Image (cartoon, rainbow, N blue to C red; front, side, top):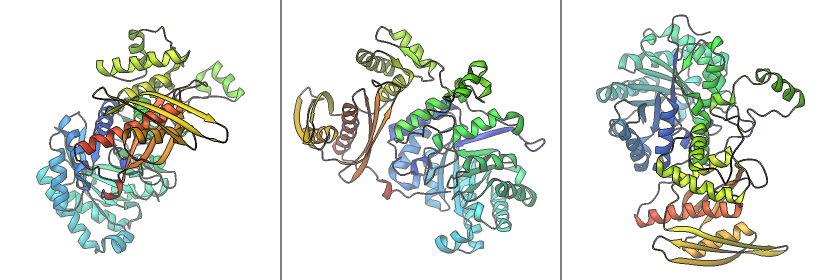
Length: 525
């Protein structure tokens, strides 16, 4: 299906840390971004778009920290077509051996008229000037004509030609608002291939949004028409309906290799662990029926399907669970299992922990094994996520007591242990056990919270399954997100709230103010 003689290798450009983070509620801390960057490296993505350095000081520092770690992939930063943005990107990414500056400007008529208020010629001059400046600082320069899918084809070809002449090494064609359809996008790419003289000298890229649910389909259409870089995010997170899903587009190319005749460098056995990491950090959990990484992706309930599976798995599975990092084994360990068995199971699940994280996770596993008879893979994954979270801080939960009665307010008593060894206990009433526990935490810590969102997910099966709670709360006018896990959902909620309380107290102590989503300059391409 791919062009005869064309390069067969598809570069995977991950923008989870830039476009993905722009999804409401998905802002991440520096430590969380570093964890995701490390996971993307293990996944073997080719390029990591680490952020938009001009958006805020915090975004600049995050991109710089990722670049300075020099993980291995190309580290990229996004910039508008102005000198200040480009200089900030270069300052942020130059610590990586392989780095890229990504510049963009809108080209569609609706953007020219209503947003930029610029003529066609002005836009081309802006793009050319930005690309030339970026090339003086960096050999690897990507250019994106924002809203390309709604740009007149003749003008788009003119812009792309000018970008290539100016020195762009990658030209990305974005479907910024998820408007196009596969046949139309195929035509667009083939038009550019036919009408831009030097287009074979650059890497053609595609960046699709999912507003009509066709981001993956449109990306694959572009690839079939000659694109050799796909811009995507883990779990498809991103603004509005999200971006092209990394795991879906990668597995489509792998599973239908005979059709596409293409390949990626992705270690697909890392897809599921990476998906779990991103969902736990962002609090955005994939739907059960999500392709590739959803809980139902490899489940079979219908009798005729189960019969076929027992005869031969390929009757109803076009991929093996192991190919994406899922284990066939469900029941794994119990309270008598030792450290070596636990470490082996963690490795089999696709996680790599250092000795400190392994010891911390094993201690939590033993506590959980004492509370429930069977420990499942999902329970262990939840423990691992908790072991790596930034939950340390001034306060730790020592004990929780809750009393509820029908038609009466609930009562909760929390006991906390401070870093200096001092303890504090407070009780509070609430409309329910969770409300009472949260108010008791407020009384004990002196931190006032406004609960914005409370999400509960079961880590495994059974009525004693580990419950994962993700909370979003407002403290001092800023939004914080935290997570906690326990077989008791009230305790899980307390741990999640205590994580954000600790985070807010640490920031107060450093006299630093977090940058809220509405303060950051968001960019979409």
